[in-house]
Amino acid sequence: MTAGQAPPEAPFPSRSPWAEDGTVEVEVAGGVATVSLNRPPGNGWTPGLGREFFAALDRLAADPEVRALVVTGAGPDFCVGADGGSLDNITNAGSYEIDAARPTYWTAMTIAKPVVAAVNGACFGVGLQLALFCDVRFAGSSAKFATAFVRRGLIAELGMTWLLPRIVGLGVANDLLLSGRLVRAAEAERLGLVNRVVEDTGLLAAAQEYAAGLAARCSPAAMGVVKRQTYTDLTSTLPAAVARGDAYLEAALASADFAEGVRSWRERRPPVFGGLDPAHARFTLPDADDARQAASR
Image 1 (cartoon, rainbow, N blue to C red):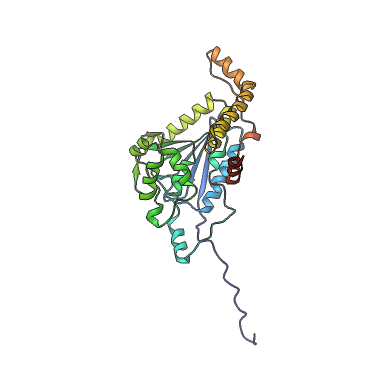
Image 2: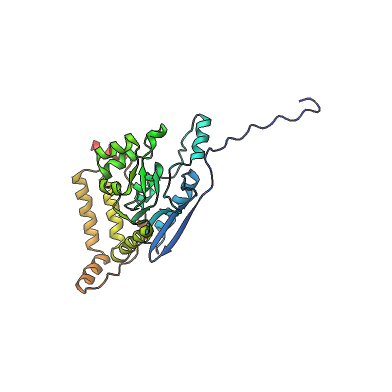
């Protein structure tokens, strides 16, 4: 470098194509936590919003005051899918590498507490998959759903090809995945994509009431084990599922919750169950290696 020359500029740092704004709101009342995606307009999904969301689920999984969760979108929509501006950035860059350290997107399935989706407005792409990861889905009467991927030149992501056929059946799943077409609330209920449709104005209250009923009437420990059974047994054999069930049943029959459940039934009063042991607040799903090892035995 000669005198008077400016030093060479440092290489321009690489930037994520994803927007970083957005928050997740949490309210807890009566044993029910309501978790709201809040990134207007439409709650377009970004990894940053995801980090906030999954961190909130982790905290609530371990919170002894929370016995059930409701997931919804702030404003008129649940989640319109990936943020459009960020997708433009990826298109302009010409490539994108998925972060291997990203959060576990199926976190809601591995929380040992019921998670209820209250789907308002648009629920597209990754937003639909977030709803599918919930245990039960309520939808407002104006809710609309679409896998959307193929209409953007994309493939089904985040395991939707594994989960959607298990919820609605293979033929319906193929229709929704291959067409990317719009499904409105009434059809979604008919297809089994959602459990219940209610008027928009009563959606959140209906989902919260359902969750509150689970929190008040059902054993937290038993619900946690039932979730573990349900999602583990999806990739299990029938004999293995029965064997696991026998082991869980023996433990349940010796539990204080079982004694209280029978006693309250006999006394014709609501049960008073203890809270969920924080040590059992989460569980893991069998991964591909576990499945292969089990198949080889």
